[in-house]
Image (cartoon, rainbow, N blue to C red; front, side, top):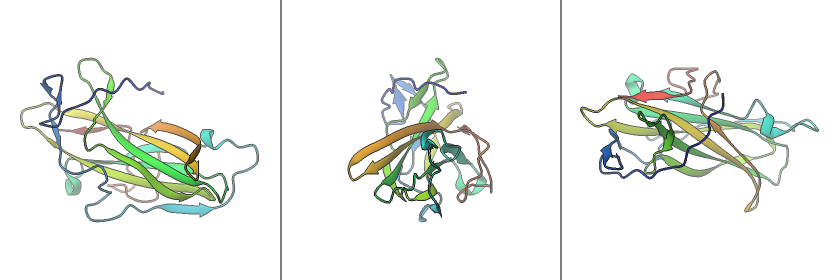
Length: 196
């Protein structure tokens, strides 16, 4: 089931306040931190071209998942991984942007966390490859005495020729994907993550 993105409301970062109400999370690291502290995200590739007439925007290789959710060795961490297919074009480059949303307990809306929860666009390589995967992890420190928060990822995908965006897509995180690397524990895949 595909959910609509509700309008983003900015969150302050003195304890992550939303309209004067404490959200209960504080960011501990920048959004550009990767799967494990001090390591780089592994990118996987398979060289091939896209079959004629196949739309890469409808490909099963275009997905996003939560592959890390508060494991003992990565406390208070949500990891988001994306996969995007190439179209065989050697003059195109693929980009992913990783963002985090939280679910508003009162309205049920999914809202973007505005500070330290956005990787910006990350170059993941040439579109000549069959598929590329990449991921980012975000650490949030719960504020004592506040309830748990449900988080999810949104991955935005772009295929560019130079500085021109040729096509774009976005996916909310869903479960059931097997990531080539980065999942903790191995093969972990979910749509959301609870940080408490």
